[in-house]
Length: 119
Image (cartoon, rainbow, N blue to C red):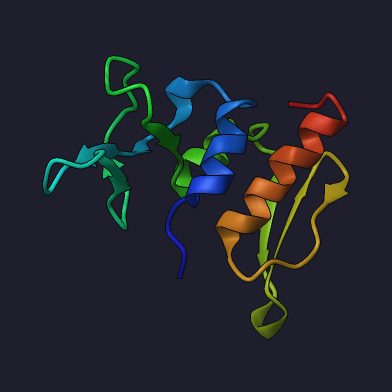
């Protein structure tokens, strides 16, 4: 099961959510194996811990499910596991389409709340 936002989701959420709400980050760094131009790479999993802008500027904040739920309006979120139909998130009378995992359902909810000025 997906445990954190992927790089593309993280980039979008970094434009919407407070950076301090991230509890992980994607660490990008350059590697040079010879005298050629350095290659920018990242690990397959993000680093755990609060995101810090003092890190390299190419690093991207990342959110776990817990961190995503923490940014949603308190006491108004329902995350439903609908079995083989997937996950659905409901908040402020807005619901998401069924997603394969709870991370995607929460990301979609955050985008919908932002569109409706409810976040």
